Image 1 (tube, rainbow, N blue to C red):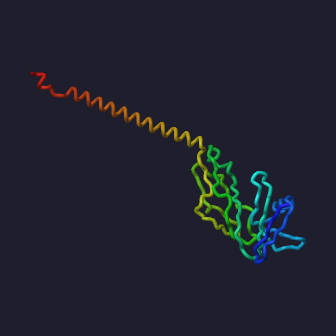
Image 2 (image 1 turned 90 degrees about the vertical axis):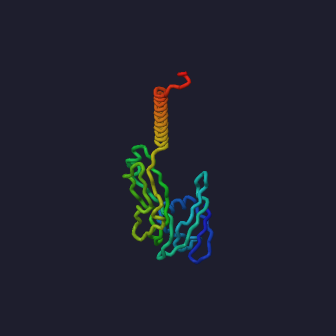
Image 3 (image 1 turned 90 degrees about the horizontal axis):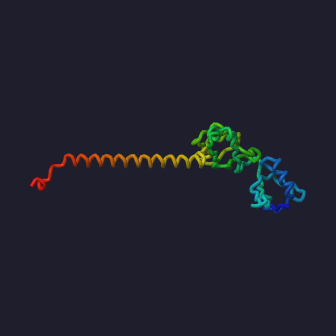
Length: 206
């Protein structure tokens, strides 16, 4: 049995317990709004506020539900589902698709909250990035996250970056050696010119 509590809506919090299998089935087959019955009595519509899982087994250990009115907008967390990542040219060339934001806060009526918001990233090249501004919410849903926040980027792999660093260092070392050789050659030429063009010491003539 999983312990839980339902609160909000101007009423007192109520504790309850639910069979874990029944809870899992209800969450998998329901939308954002859930119908809750406690001791055989139907309660007001509720939405999932928090689900606590065991860090090792992943089993649900606690659930929080929030009473809502179907005609009043609420804030909710919605999953961002990026599609087409495997087809992105940058990924095919060995880049790594890094999703910075996986959930965003939206405002909507309880019945309009989507399970997820999708975005196609199949055209991204290495070095490309997108912000939250590219996300398109369903009708009646407002995205509250910062539109300038980075959403996803395709970066070069660690191995590719390491190879680039090695090539850069090699080029710098090569340039340094070339400069040193040039300075040595110039110095030698100057010394040779000085020896050829130097005046004869007067003491040697005496």
